[in-house]
Length: 413
Image (cartoon, rainbow, N blue to C red):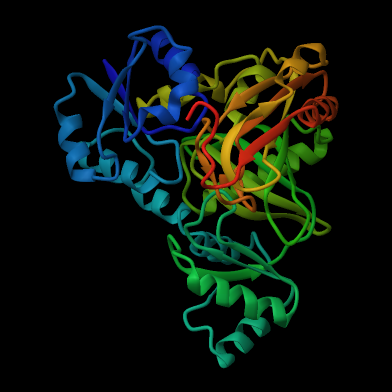
């Protein structure tokens, strides 16, 4: 029996293979570029999974390929980029899935904001920016107020997001946005001030379990670059219970009945405000951290959900493990990635720190204002998320991510 995976997040493929094996399934990875998963594939035994190279954006071709897979029982689509393709494939092939219309809704941040506003779960509606002329700008300021955020309805990785604190910044942001190739439409919403978190949840049959909360330490304004994450954040008992109930209402409001969700929110002075709802497990090393901190392979729940079965992770106490934290490693300047200095120091530091590479020597790093710019991740553990953060930051401080100016050949090139 086979479960297909339509692309994957950078990390977690090994856990997914082991989860499939334990559940008696064979994992098939469909990908445009296997090198993207080099770190994970190099650490798996030969033949641990099947890998088929194909144009995963071509839904018709991928559907024809999957129809020829013997014993296909489920499909996993765990990335924002392929969410809609995955929804189309499960619909065409009659595989277990959440309602495709709900998945399409989650990929429209403006529509989600308005749905939550209608349900009384956010203070403001989204305001779409169809024509940024003087009259439209005045209406935008009147309806949204300052500060506000301009962003892409279908954006990912903090790309195409602008903080606007005055009219001058609004003019500059609208001009810049007009030059960008947006994945969706441009819209505005209020800028909610406060610390940012991500709730890692699992929902089945309309009931949501909060598995834990990840911290999301960001770069200083006006950028929204993700820099440090820790899991699990130790919310006091009553506050955690209240948060879990709020998340249950948020997901119910958009019709999200099954599977993992990664819900980004701001803890404001007036309570939590949703930033976005992602219909997947968290990216970077969030999935890895959940496995270690919770003491279970959470990817088994992903396989079970793809098979249309209630995940066992929905109930019962979890064994638990160390708290985790990780720091995204950005270079000081854009250029051609040429390596990392200081990796030899990690074994002598507390928290068993490790470097998880994302870029390979020779890769071009152009953008340092969002998550496209990090070359790897420094990971560490401790008894609490706070202590794990201290250890991960200390380990990251010992490293330097190097780039060469464009046009200069990287070593070994």
